[in-house]
Amino acid sequence: MDAYEVLGHLGQGSFGSVSKIRRKEDGRIMVWKEICYGEMKEKEKQLLVNEVNILQKLRHPNIVRYYDRIIDKHSTKIYIIMEYCTGGDLSQLISKCKSDRIFIEEEVIWRTLVQILSALHEIHNRKDGVILHRDIKPGNLFLDESRNVKLGDFGLAKILTNSMHAHTFVGTPHYMSPEQITGKYNDKSDVWSVGCLVYEMATHRPPFYDATTHNQLYEKIRDGRYIPISDHYSTELAQVISTMLNVNMTKRPTVEELFSFPPIAFRLKERK
Ligand SMILES: CNC(=O)c1c(C)[nH]c(/C=C2\C(=O)Nc3ccc(Cl)cc32)c1C
Image (cartoon, rainbow, N blue to C red; front, top):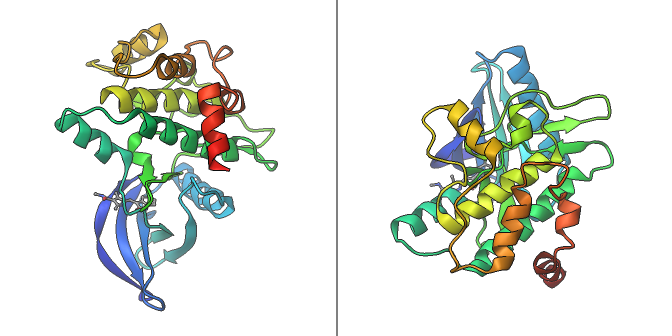
């Protein structure tokens, strides 16, 4: 612990708070997510071990980099040390544009979409088991100094080896897919969440909203109807949102299939 100096509190991640830290040996700025596991049930401890094991394996420009972990048995805390993203998270960008009543530039939305899909392609197509993020939302997408988008906080992620299937109810209700309501989370549920995210970048609010109870929200999600985005944006953007928000997951595209959509394909080529 004394190898690091805490510089300040940044926000709340899944299971713990995130602080900005400096590594004393070289002055490098990083973050750690501090999690108290003392009160955790076995299941939650397993999710925590999961998060660290998953993060350790991942190396991708659009996934927050994991560096190290410190387990303090005395205080029953674990510190997960990760990459610092100077731009904060996407929820801050969306709230700023909402309060300033300005549209997020369409190109920013496309770039964000392509980068998140690249991160999902990495985790959905791993040879040693598909990883599902299961909690894609603006607060889990971080911006580095060059406005690159990084998928972070794998606190609710799950490795699906061939024997396991995701049955647990997790995920932020607003971005919950219809199949997740009945407990069948899969890679296309992450695609649904990305559709919700792109919609929220274009309209400053989730597509399925304004519900007083979770059941009312689930009804809206299962119904699948939402207010179309403004014609300030292109029909291509509206189409890609509509295909990702298809309530029938067999008709919803995989990340791989989205890569062949022309507006996405040509921006992918630009990155190479
Ligand atoms: C107001 N908060 C911020 O500006 C902020 C900044 C500059 N960075 C962050 C958060 C992270 C950050 O910079 N790197 C991270 C890695 C993993 C997780 Cl779960 C969170 C972060 C935040 C919340």
